[in-house]
Image 1 (cartoon, rainbow, N blue to C red):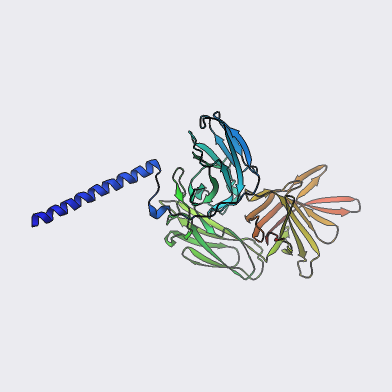
Image 2: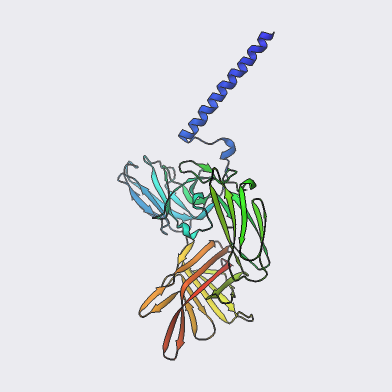
Length: 431
């Protein structure tokens, strides 16, 4: 009887050893051949398919290879020689970004399902200087699979070309994404109000882990970062900050501060000795537009119609009240064309357009005239929330390092450089 019991144990042990060996072998094989990850980490979050936002750009590429670039210049596809056996018709089209961790626009590359003999290169143009609140290491590129789940991996950043790039053997819908972030990264908050912030992870990791090139991971659902990896919260500016692990509440001052925006930052401990700093810029002011000239008093305007689009031109028109209050007696207009795919637009001679006209004969514009030369101001418009859907929020900030103050005099026109800075929060016109 004892002998029978012993052999059962032996058989169980042998089965355990065999099962363990098979598990290790399968795990090793999954890394080498990129087979699906274990069930607990492949769920991700299915999202709707993006909607087209512009006419696609098309090209025919054959065995010799070629390139294709999106209409807004933000995405480039390079097909190497030998990747195709013959001619194929390709297209790239900007679409709405349904990736919960997405940054900027998404892009549809067609035809879906076509397999390449050699990897192709997909590059997103992105100047990280325009995203100071985002950790560059956390940025990757993702595609949406046939189940609606975005699959993200690390990207190679070229600091000279300002591109993030990945190699792939197939087409799909693609977007930039960030693996972890502070939420919100930018906000507009009325004086005296409270804003809730959190550090979120868009992938399955508990700690802040940058996406690795060539290693695919599903995105979503969003969850708060484990509090043990939060090192410290800080507030730079007026107001009050109450932190609790991976979350914090910021209470705005009752009046607009002289330093605007205020910055809430959180430092993180990553794997090994890695450290990360995330920043949320919070503008204090009522809904509408708030701005000042040469560090003077803050001026405020309402935007009755929100952002209106006509023939490709987006217009934000505000009625501005005096610094000491009262009825509106001035007008401000901000205009731009197209979709700000990089979420940042530099001032131009014509567009983006800035015009502020207070009472009298003085106006302020986005350029200055020197002799016969029109010189656009340095700086630009930066959008932190942007939508082409009616009724959705559009939030942004702007700075004109050398706006042109034009004064009409008895002998002509005098131009003086001034600094103008401000921010706005409004909605896309619903008409």
